[in-house]
View: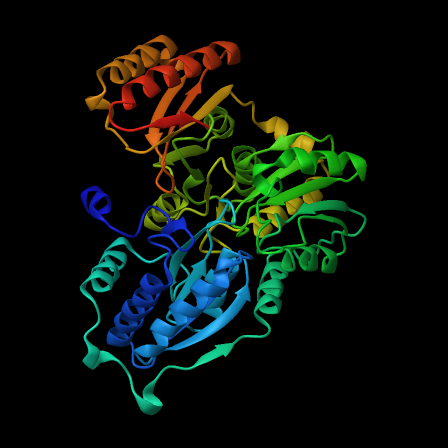
Length: 463
């Protein structure tokens, strides 16, 4: 399977992504992708329909029209959902009984990027083999005889109440016996897809809501706001004397939390809090939480103390979901804030995760700062390096040797992880162990060695 992924031309670990109006995010390629999608589902279903949603990037309009044109040209109808969080599109794909749902978003990336990911009718991302088949159709081209004519050309319809339907779903996931009355909550919606539905949900559940990042202009998504910049949220939580704050990323499939003291909680801490709550209530299937190799060792220990377990996958929420589906697990996620509650949703959902955490707070009568003491985090240092060429470590002897030396030095008291990003041209090093300062020195030295080694294969720079 890994060989197929490396050989792909379009789909990466999280769909297709790139600079808008540059390959592969070109209108003409999106038109061909739309045709390929339409023909695939037309071949497998009698009268297919495909939903299309997006975040707030200005290029979303262009790509939405190109995809829809391709889909309609082969006789398949499209439904425009407008700006909706990625998990909302996954839900609406099921709720509207469409055969697929397309998300136009580059998640946490800047507005100049965009991307496409596709959900099946069951609300899960398309399986690898289907993505590969669609990709092959894109590059082989469409037989002109398969284009529709006359009354058989596909139609497009806008779903006016898409956000309302998703908001109702979210509120139904919050315990009916609980209310957010009296809670002061700050939301940073990253000028992204949650800018309308986020405030709506929390206000209608009774909270007093203070807002940031709710004035999208097509170019300010993720711009010094949202989940990547929780410092701004921390300042607002303290300013408004709020009980808690939530920062979403551009497509709102992840959340970062700030407690009432202005301290940041990442996805690992939220998984620990919610995982132990699920365990107490008998809802944690197999007494297991699924996370990635990036999750903190403290999460392992917090779960082990209470008799639960942590299973790790490779980086990427799709791999977490695959493991959860395979063994029926109910809770999983990533340190970055992608949290999957499979008893409620099929994918990571920032707003849903926030509601799940609030429910634990209210049921236990404890603040977020009190709840997070269930987990003691190990120091971690992560650094990224932009690379033009992703060179295998075995082709860089100095790097390979240094990795082995660092692993030996940390032993069973820490971890070393080196990987290339699946969505960006970057290399990442993560070191975990007992001493922050020592880890920082090791990471800085590694970056120097990596830069020197990669230079012969292509330019790179520290970011």
